Every structure is written in C-alpha cells, then in structure tokens.
Length: 316
Image 1: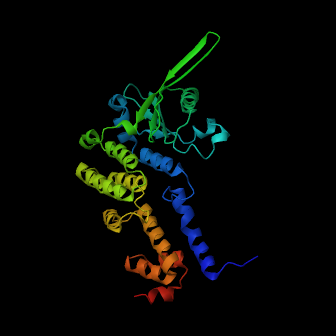
Image 2 (image 1 turned 45 degrees about the vertical axis):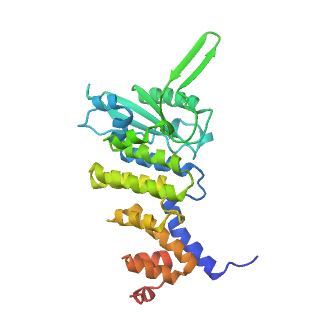
Image 3 (image 1 turned 180 degrees about the vertical axis):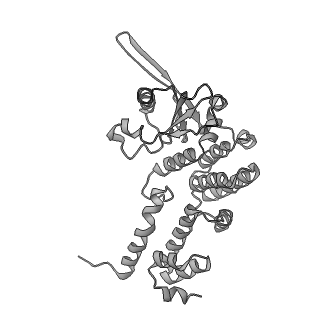
C-alpha cells in the first residue's frame, strides 16, 4: 500500500485538531448535508429562548414569569424518540416555560425546524406532542418552523372505525415571510427569520449571500441589543449565509472578521479554519506567519501547525 506523503500526514494531523471541533459546534459544512442548517437553528433558538418565544408566541411571552428561567429539556426528548432517526433530528427543541399563574405552572414549547420536504412531519409533530404531554405532565404547544421551499402542512388527521383524530399545530413558513415587514419588526428574532429568508432568496449565489449578510449585519447594529446577544445573532447570519465559503467576496469576509472582534471561541475557530485551509495550499510556514500576524499566541500556532516554538518565534 502506498505510504502517504509527509505533507499528507501533516495535513491529516492539522485536520484532526480542528475539523471535529468545528463540526460539533456546527461551524463546518462539509459532509453534513442539510444537517448544518438544523444545527445552526437549534443553537440560535437555545441561545435566544425568550426572543424566540416573543416572536413565535407573543401570547405565551405575555404570560411568562420572567422571575424564573425557562428550562431546555435536552434529556427528555431524545429518550422518547425512535432510534431510527438517531443523529438526524438535531433541530428539535423543547422548552419548559414558567407561567405567572403559579410556582408550579409551566408550558412545554416544542419546536421542530424542517428544511427539506418530509411527508412524516405531521405524524412526528403529533408524536412529539403526546409524548411530551405524557412525560412532562404539562400543557404543550407545538410549532414547526419551515425554513425551506416546502409545502406547509399544519395538521395530522387520521381515523379508524369511528375513532378520529385531528391534531393541529402551529406553522411558521419562512418562504412566505415579508422581508420588508421583518426589517421594520423591532423584535431581535425577526433578524433571524430575515436571515433564513435571505438564504432562500440568495440560493447558491455567493454575491447575493454576501450582499444580504451586510444588510443583516447593519440591522443587528441598529437593534442596539447587548453584545452577547448581538454575537449570537451575527454568528447565525454568518453560518446560515455561509460567509466562510471561499467564493464569498474577500471584502465581505473581512468586514465580518472585523465585526466579530473581540474574538469569542467560535470566531477564533473560524479564523483558525481559514488560516489552516490557506496553509494546506501555500504551506504551513506561511499560514503560521499569518496566524502570528493576526495575534494568535505561539502555543495556539504550534498546536494547529505542528511547528516548533523556535520556528514560530522566528516569524517575528
């Protein structure tokens, strides 16, 4: 068997250090099919629970007890789901929301995001509803967020010899949203929906994706929300419009890099990925020099390039 070249060995070593980390965080798009969209949505909703509730269920937001925290239900929903879909249903979110009516009063808000056509979606929504009702013993409200160009369905209907079921659930269809209304909407989650709308509008056109990303970036600045929330929303925009792709205008990518300073963990990983990919093409020493110029510490450069500390210090 042919032995891999030294450069191939080095590339695999580098890839092993950052590729898996980025994939877990949902930042890496390759070999994920449409699941990267699901991952981006789940992260955005769980990081901005109250904003999502205010946008999709304003009546529930009005009844919400803000003195107590909403609780995500990560250990309940997977346990009652079938093994057949294991690894594919990563966008489902269940949130237990406290109500003003009493210390023990809560509502379970079940959200499923769907990007591709799926004839079994109504059945899954019903299964999620009754299983959550049985497991949590609280009222449940269900919502399907349709983020692709798919036909909306809002009910599961079945009958059997005189027994009938007509289960209706909430649906938000991104493709039918009005972009201008979303721009005027003061709620921060309207920007999330507009980003998803722009993703559909732009398709695979990198020029359009870059243009829309700058539009959305300006909207996040205008909203005047806190720095942490702004970074959450901007990270979603960056991911959903795939601004990290090499075919995006470099000037657009540079605007985003400057905007996302100070660097948080996710942005640090994006910049590491960009630098390492460039290194695969131009050589590890050049990417190390770029990382050094960008202010990465010597230990980080050593970890992701494999260069000795003396070699890294010589870059100065």
